[in-house]
Image 1: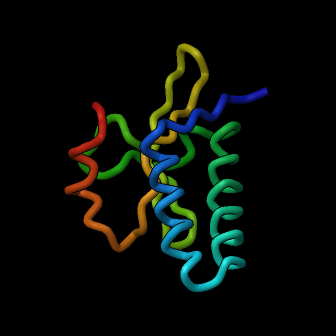
Image 2 (image 1 turned 45 degrees about the vertical axis):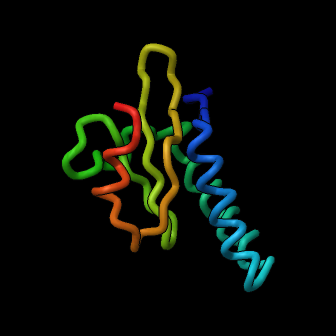
Length: 102
């Protein structure tokens, strides 16, 4: 069955912001990017530890989907993967990760 994926509110806000930005240009681009991100996140059901810890973090792992980094935590006790943030790779992730819950 695998792990359950849970999107934290912050990650949903991130996806909405990405959609708003990309929709200014081409709606089909947004659909493709969102589909790729969701497909990659789907891998976490079966291989939640298959992606590295984010450098400098002992709790967040990083999955890369195209130009975007997905930061997530794995909770073994209830087999849940929590998606905490979805950021463009050009962002200063080191500064933004400080704002995420520990």
